[in-house]
Length: 258
Ligand SMILES: [Zn+2]
Image 1 (spheres, rainbow, N blue to C red):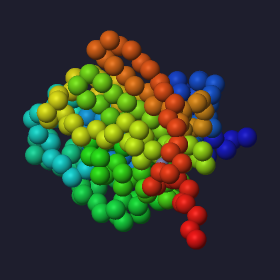
Image 2: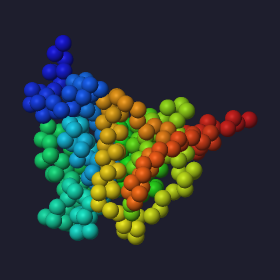
Image 3: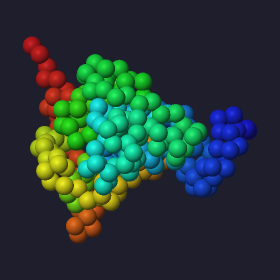
Image 4: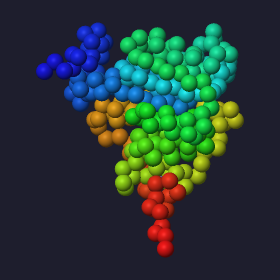
């Protein structure tokens, strides 16, 4: 069987050999990564952390969406942006760094604040969506689109010394982001007011990237139906079950009409 050699070049087999040595990954997992299309919303702290590992890991196609420009205050944690990038669109700066990290991948940069229809179209063209935004409205729009198209949604957040990661796979009995925000309330704090420790956003982004790779290569148990909470102040990790809300406005069963 040389199927794997048709998908991965010799150069790629060598490049990813430490991945391929992981039994659960093997050639098949690495091929799935190469064939994957991942949509990343946000090229800030989380977007930089998670996308740099997806790039070096060999995720074949990534689309990055943001409408912001690089500022000097971003450089403390947004590792894909450099001093010379100040003033550039974040997606262009991120794309340049990602392509340097791995020339075997394709990165598509979209420098725009998309409408819900445009986002939904984009979601339908990808097999995984990573929420790297700190915007609740965008997160809710993404959740609706991912639910509609049944595209797995990996949501992460980091602020101060804390972070959360969860996976929504939209299976019949699993919760969605709306179920979660109904339970916990929405996070309206931003890093501008509250601050964020540089490696904490990196840590949370790396967990998000790990969940993305497991989901794409189809191994392990991901955080579907659970939320992982990281408290870097005490360095405690806790995971909690997330219940589906039967009357959820997005994923709940509509009440019978008479
Ligand atoms: Zn729901």
